[in-house]
Amino acid sequence: MTKIISISNQKGGVGKTTTAASLSAGLFALGQKVLSIDLDPQGDLGFCLGLESDSPVTLYDVLTKKCPAQSAIQSTEYGDVIPSDISLESVVVEFAKGGCEAYLKDVLGSVIDSYDYIIIDTPPALNILTVNCYVASDYIIIPMLTEILSLSGVIKIRETIQAVQESFNPRLKVLGILMTRNITRLNLSKEVEEMASDLSALFNTRIFTTRIRNGVATAECPAHGKPVQFYAPRSNPGKDYTAFVQEVFTILK
Ligand SMILES: Nc1ncnc2c1ncn2[C@@H]1O[C@H](COP(=O)(O)OP(=O)(O)OP(=O)(O)O)[C@@H](O)[C@H]1O
Ligand SMILES: [Mg+2]
Image (cartoon, rainbow, N blue to C red):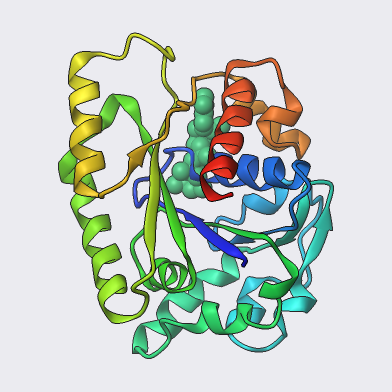
């Protein structure tokens, strides 16, 4: 059975795209058939996976049913990807009329059986694109910055998840919360540990054992078209993302 995982948090800059690229590439390196989907009009995921130029067909053309999903798939060294660009932004307005919540799920129907994993990168928003993502997904991974863990910031994402579970997708599950950009892997403060345990209770999920440490290689690697564990395997974030992929793979095996 194909497992569809979205990487989501409406807060910007928490490591969603970095995590999506590393998870896709890592699962692909473990011999899995992987499709990455960029659901963010910022359109970074394709470049993080090594696509070099703008794509003639993007997720926008697929979601608006101008082209079949197959025609937007591009192969990279790190698996297949459906890229996006700024044109996806117009979907937010077009789809706001309602009744469009399951479009992504529908268009993926024709390609889903070709993959073991579909990994979806999402925009820093809770809008109709996010809802489409949750309707299509089996699991959500929520990256969070350790230094600003807060309950208030996550109530909205929990409400959106619950609304989708109730109306469209009862099997949707939060697979876990990933702490990103830690200054150190150990010695987290008591306050952070307490907040992490409150968050895991709130989402009825785990905090991943692996925590991603801070490291400059993460900022450098998109320009080289390589996810961080392939660009700098011995860097702290490189090692941590390798461990994180293994942790996810083991949980879902
Ligand atoms: N472990 C890390 N150490 C240092 N910098 C990191 C780390 N993870 C991500 N970054 C940097 O933080 C910035 C945001 O990361 P990323 O683009 O993955 O976040 P995002 O949640 O996808 O952002 P957005 O909400 O804008 O889509 C990038 O410049 C990235 O290089
Ligand atoms: Mg992003």
